Image (cartoon, rainbow, N blue to C red):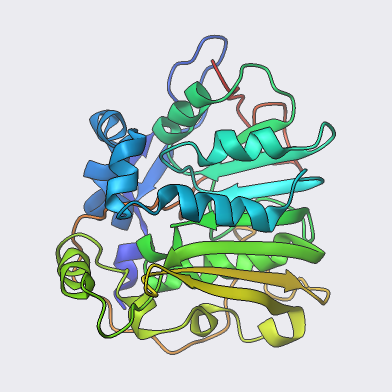
Length: 314
């Protein structure tokens, strides 16, 4: 795989000017995100276009509510402890998740783009102390080991190059507490006779360059090699003729810090076989939260990491 696809570009991105808030750091957009997904997530008009629930539901062939509710059901009700949602999601997934939060619970939403965090803030109640919008890196999460009871990824992994996808999964397991759940909803290889199979293959070829990986490989192939000692699958379900999957893993063991990189605090995946990457083309649905950015939270700093305030509803 061409590593240049995973490196930050020279384009800088700062937090938007929100009432009572100001940016102090300039953050580079990852090159693959800038080149492949600019029209769907980076440009403000993209947010205006895709932040329509009927449109997201159409993209998922009428399955948005079903997949959303299946994911939320895996998190339980009420949702207690600390939950990390990796990447903002178009539609009402996060507001519905917030409705399930216990009074003492906390929800962190991590994304790399301020425009996406600002869009999500508009959909959430103002001044809810349980909600924290964090600008940061899914492949090097600025959180301590075993920090969360739940981690949710909703149509994220198919939008990421292989190396980013592997690092994101490794980080999700690292920050998950023993006994905690990692809930993944994403594409899957449909049954051979699925009537939408030719259309989806065309969509992947033209619009979703990394998604075909999830047709050719099971999620297990992207998990870190130490996963059998760290986690086990609780459930795996296919939806809509196998086109979508819901995978739930639980942490069973203690992680070590041997994989932490001293220079950037990121998790370094073990050497792995590289899958042949498709050419970079525009993306379609999920939100990649990716390389090279510092985390931002709405209520103060965390663990010595520089932080900015970004409050829901501002």
